[in-house]
Image 1: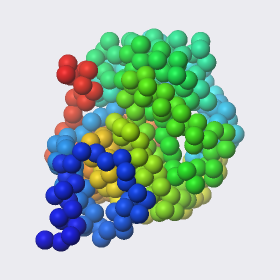
Image 2 (image 1 turned 180 degrees about the horizontal axis):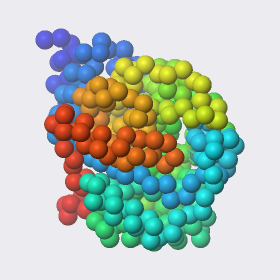
Image 3 (image 1 turned 120 degrees about the horizontal axis):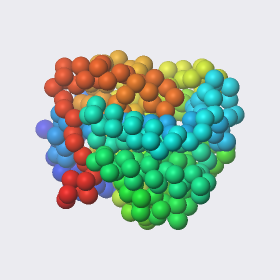
Image 4 (image 1 turned 60 degrees about the horizontal axis):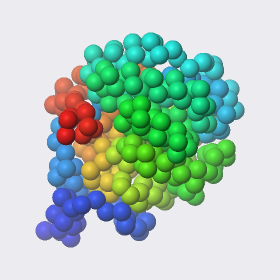
Length: 336
Ligand code: SF4
């Protein structure tokens, strides 16, 4: 038995660790691919049904005109991408989309707004949306930008299960991507969300021109959060014309799969979500991501403003892989 296999037996069912060092995470990235996949699979199977996938639907409830300057984002007002600024959607329209998502098999409904942070008037309306979606029996998730402690508590009181706020990349590369808010701002929002008792959805984007060392730094930071984020979205950059990252060279899909595998090993009990970028990904790459431990996807033809595989294509892929949708994963909604 190889040293790596011996390590696997120890780490597979072990409690999540929060003391991963950069060197250890780097070593995982550098493993031979077969070894890395074996370890990720072993950890995955010790914690999850390897054929089950959680399905989320993401709706843009307030599109475009964002004052932030995230270099990957077509919704930033700083870039000319053809995305028009819209007003916050009315409650009834959001609930209609949530019912449709539920009918299509989604268990979680995420609402995204292109804000730096919500204004008080807007937050009230979002709280009504959260309450309405929750009453449909769906898990609720929102991504609204930075939150104060009081705003996080208000969302929790309205019934919010998850809050998405990504770290995006490593602390070192972050300044190359975003200038209008700091890494520390992001960590503060995550702390407010945690303190309010809302589950955390936090991951990042790869393929933005960062180095492997940046991917190591991002995963090390995520795996150092206590507790780990319940959901860890790993996004492949969608290169949108008009954004500063439109021409960045494509990342090797194998490196993307490696990132998913390292996220699985270092955060063994988190849902690792295959998020943006699936539209441009081969089905074989997606299948490798599931083997590497991804167990959550976004469903539906659009992810905020960029394309996503249609439901039929996803259902067909799930069928061919013999995978099935998990119902609810939030304990409170399972009655646990
Ligand atoms: S990622 Fe979010 S915060 Fe950044 S520009 Fe886009 S909508 Fe605004």
